[in-house]
Length: 69
Ligand SMILES: [Zn+2]
Image (cartoon, rainbow, N blue to C red; front, side, top):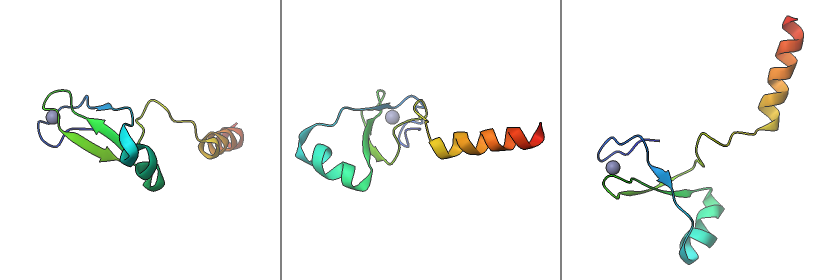
């Protein structure tokens, strides 16, 4: 995640506020983000890199590790 306006690499995800962000954005999988430097707001289809818990990926990794060992 990087700000396209000031190249800040620490933009933060905002809490959903209002009807549009709470009701409409989830339908398309968008999340509201904001740059703390220039206050530019963005909509990304990402929740951020800190929360990655995909069962399919972990399963694939477990299978590959079993094959190599
Ligand atoms: Zn910025």
